[in-house]
Length: 62
Image (tube, rainbow, N blue to C red):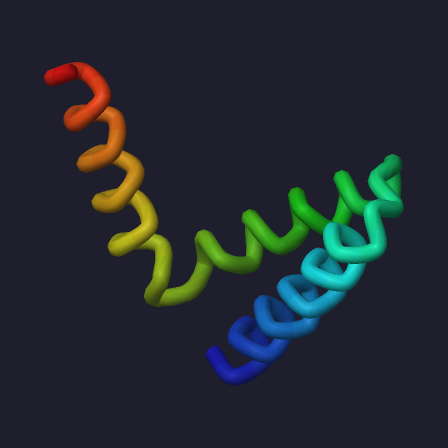
């Protein structure tokens, strides 16, 4: 679990740096995908899925 959390933090920092420097390309897409897979294996996956479901339901009710 500790390794997974540190990988999520590392991928998040690299993705934040790439987005702020506006250097979008294949490398940043790979980092974003790896960040998503790493985030999905942590305890944050449940709340993220619930938030996504709530947003989709709210948009459907507009």
